Image (cartoon, rainbow, N blue to C red; front, side):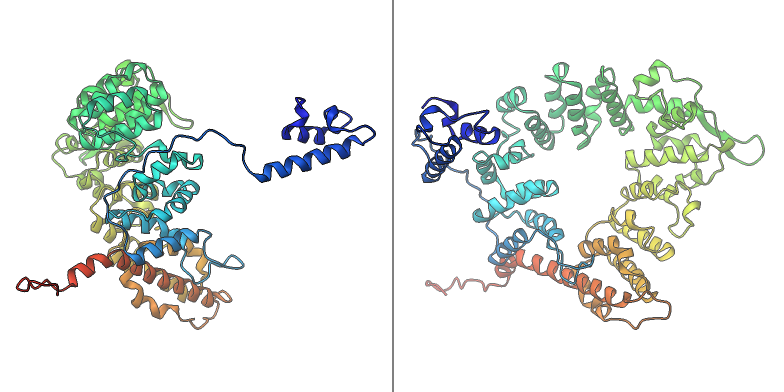
Length: 552
């Protein structure tokens, strides 16, 4: 039978279109029989054949054995915990929008993976499929999941197209050559897929920062603009003065986005030639004014954006609603080294400079540019000055009233100082304004910050507010509070007396929310203990009696 309707696909087509429009092959319809009935008979026969087994085929080449992973295996309890976290990815049960009192295992899986990777464990072989499935479903899990899975996951991914995302590579994975193997690095850089090349560049950068721009330079002229931009962006990690020659060349790139990124990276290097040029330009725009007795900052924004400024990354056309001169001024000031302003403004400290009045309504623009510069240059002194005291009114800060900008400034401060600042902010302004700031604090939260968050939640509970108004902060607390706080929070799990004017039933909701918080903290503590079980056993095991010849 050679007619296409004798194949399974042909029979399906004939069934869909109808036997009048697509009749079955003549040899399928015996004389005097109905065509539709004959089609069904043929379909039944094909179904049996399809279910009976596969047609014989030539044996494929046996795959190479999976590479060896020398990392230690997980302790037994931690292995069971990982299986539990991977098996329950649906989230906590709840009705009517309530999350219930049980911990949300989906939120604990990222923390568990990070903790296991810090201890350099490898995933159990039997759980690799479930781990890869979880990473396929959640892109946020992929870096940590693939690190734990190790080289065997890449070996499996080559055998299952559902896991092909793992083959896109990650720095340090076995899919990449050793960065010291220059021949293999050069080969993959020339012939690899884009994602493999990005991963390779990242790996080379991690081992030898100066080798990354040298590798980029070998193919830079032939790369697509969007690829050049991605490659250039990878130089942010480990950025140093050694990158300046390559970045200066990129300032002449034919792509505006590449030029802008190169200029941004150069401005983060205070000793670069571009930073010096921007400092000279900004010095002509910002200076001290003593003409009226009081010392003020005088601002004269640029009147044009010349070709040299554009080459150094200044975008000439402002966004809608922005004036050209203020747009140009902001770009110059944010790219100038902050270390030069004290010398140009009378030897004043950053705090004293930020406190000076600014002429002609330029203060907001000038301070916003200094905020961007402090974030870009990771300058903690200027960040402190621009943040000001956390208890100040939200619209009276010295630098910016934007909580998003404050969060960026906070990220430049040391971890404990950051936590103390946010704790004092919460004490002064409450939790509703602090969510973005909490997101940049180191985990687990330092004791002053954890105490401030819990106290604020307790105040909200006593006020009779509904807890879902604080669900975002409560979720952060579950992930970020020190697990040792669980015992201290036990008292908050009781249902409080309903105060006059309180929202009906709010006490029960708060009790449930605090039960979930306490349960989650205890589960996090248990997870860490399970991961450290082997180390604890090793530390507490009795030392061998070396005076005896036999086993103890």
